[in-house]
Image (cartoon, rainbow over all chains, first blue to last red; front, side, top):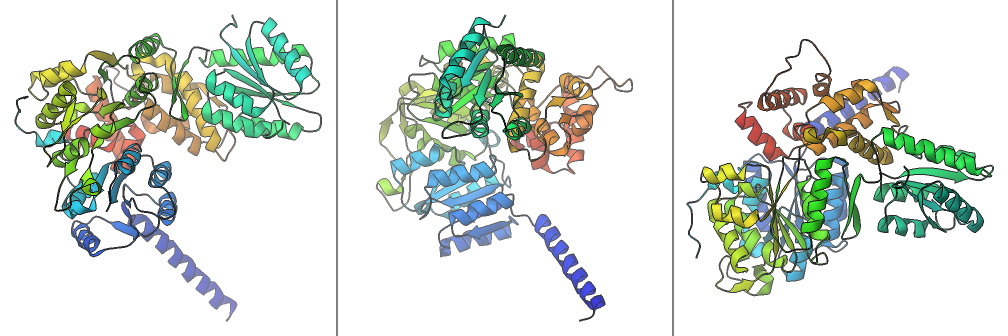
Length: 163
Length: 449
């Protein structure tokens, strides 16, 4: 390869690299799922998010998720409580260490009082039980992504007497 | 004059340690000494010091490592490093990392006193004094609230008095004034300190989800403990429950919270079982709840239930005398992370702009401004050019109208910030030191959308 050709190849590679960086910035995801495995129920949820134009990314291990969180910006994390390598409360602390404003939604297939207490101590956004179905989870994600107005103030019910 | 300055002296050399401690005590300082860094950190946690004098070479941890630990738990404390002959480079490194000065062994007592006196004067110029920190232990962390203003000292006194009782407290204050820190202090200083402290942000979830988060939920075909959501109220049993932005909740939920506080009982959604809960409630809001009651948006009975002890947190513009102190605190905090030379000073123009500015985002905004300046500034001095443009306009400019209402000022400031961030809401909210929801609300209110 001639030096001119080499120079040209280098320039092309450089510009492609630049373009990749620019694309990454523009397509920055704002919702990250850290789930041990993707189940059919999640596929349904992902389709809904795609339909609602909510960018998201899925990763299957907590450590990889923390690593992603260190390098990229996410507004909402959906995190499964069952994780082999790290304790759930420790994972939340590490994620919040990367971005203290991130909204953490924790999901679990099996709940216990101690698990819920540990998770709630970390000041999470929403705690979801898988057996409750995806509708509530979807609603929580949409609200967290500000696609729905949060705050009960927008949804004021009629005054209710105290019994 | 020096009776409030507390000095921590760490050196493994017994003779030097006791001689220096005696000398400084004679000069009117309150001195505690320790033989190793671990002892020093323990003393720091228990007592809190204005100045730490530490040897560089010590068993287990060197002086720089000790200083780093100290800066984490007490960024307000200034450090003087003692080095032996031939280790001067360590002292220079320590100063680069934020130590105030160093003393090279052997030194005369007069030199020690001169360095300490110089530091005390420096601290006074920055507005730091022994009484400027309200400290408490929250779980494993030492939390400091920085303020010397009279109005905040009154708040601290009230918190100390109210904390050990079980009374409901309503914390009132603008966004970014530190309402959650005060709630944590109330918990940490109470008899419930070893029990849970749970926070619920009332403005962020839709009503159905909020209710399930608060009171728990039994749902679906699965039953039993594994498929039951206990809810935050039940899990706070024995401890403290903090409702942040209580003014944002619906009348329906207000009724349920009132019942939970009055009856000390809750019922999970979808369940008939009544659960007894013993929870101390602390609530906070940036809204005018009296007005909300008048407009029918907030239940009067709940308002009276919550405001047994109201605590008013002043905005930063109402306690400008705390700004230099907070600046120093945040600068020190940022120096720990800074790759470049540590920030050592703030030039007059920048300080003047910082003091004149109205801080609609309060302490959170000040913290963000310092963080931004520490990133932008290449030198060790924060200059006007490293402050956001919105602060430049607060310096004396004859073209600027001077008599604006707070509302107009806030509106203009938000508009400028949005323009500056190209309408990136997250970035704008961060710069303003408010959360995104509050910013959305303000954008709607001021028709900036």
